[in-house]
Amino acid sequence: MTLQANSKAACLRIKTCPPAKARYQRRHDLRVGKLPNYVDADRSHLNRCLVSPRPIPEITSEIDALRATAGCKRKRKTNAAIVVVGVIGFGRDVQPDFCALSDQEQDAAIMMLVKTLAQRLETLVESVDIHRDESAFHAHFSLRAYNHHGRPLTACLSPSLLSDLQSLTCDILSGFCPTIERGHKKSERLAAGAATADVVHRSVRRLHSDLPREIAQAEAARDEIVAASDLAARERDAIEAQISDLKMQSEKEKHALAQTEQRVADMEARAKTVQQKSRILVADFNRVATALGTGRITIDTDEHWQLADMGDHVIDAWVRKAMTPPLIKLFRRQQAIDAELQQTRALRLRLEELLSQPDLDADLRRTGENLFAEPSPPMF
Image (cartoon, rainbow, N blue to C red):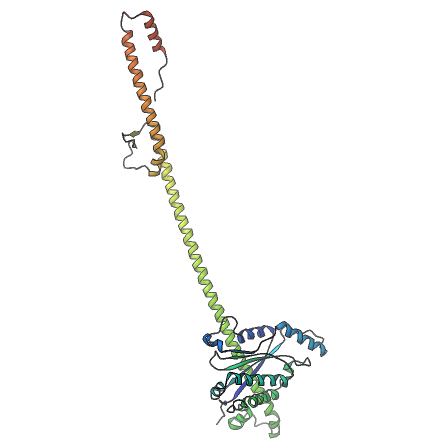
């Protein structure tokens, strides 16, 4: 029977990170920005930061100084790794035992493991964070990606060393939680159930030489795949969050566009109404002016005026209000002129009667005839 993964094992995963990915990993470790969907925000206060990270420019400056001391003449590439990040996890059957430890014991175990890894790789610890707001307890850490001699850790992380680090993880953590075991090596799995067809053509001596190296490489590749899968999941969540934000922004822009279009439609409708109203006003003003010129305006005793021969047409209230004062004034003036004209005509008739008398004095007759010769007052 093929051996299954040991559910009582502690797991160590490590990978290198250039500056851009290091910044992203820090935001994840410190819970900066939008949280992924798999994070329980109500438990984020249970997370613990054991070692705060240094500024990235400080790390890169230190790396450049170490490389210069080591005699490296080429400039470091901008996408070269500056930290090695790692995750410390626990199998499902041993995780409750480790979580049962006090916070101080958990912190001491994680710190001892990370510091020992840094000593083994001859580098510095850059950050340590414990997460308790995801589905399983785990710890993130990062190490400077160059050792004290200016050599990149990628040159040191051989398959055999990676296997030793897994054993070291078990040795240190089991000192705090005795139920922790080491994971099964692939060589043990092959021995327990792997098919021999892939290795039968090699001699036993060759197998003893190749298998440990190939198993370590396979384990390292598996760890890289798992780490890449985790990173891909986090990047997917970040992309989904960006898509959600873009959709929300698009909805806001659509709403704003609809409001703008509605405002434009309202303004056009108001402009059309004003235009129609203006035409009505102009037409009514012209009707009143024409009626005034042709004498087709009547006014009653209550000074209410109306155009003659208008039928069912009603003068606009605004036009009526605006035209009423000058029309009333004009009619009153006309009435005064008519009264004066009537008085003048009455006097002329009386004068004619006097002039018709045969015994009228000659001087008075000449005076009366002169009055008839004067021009008549204007008629409106």
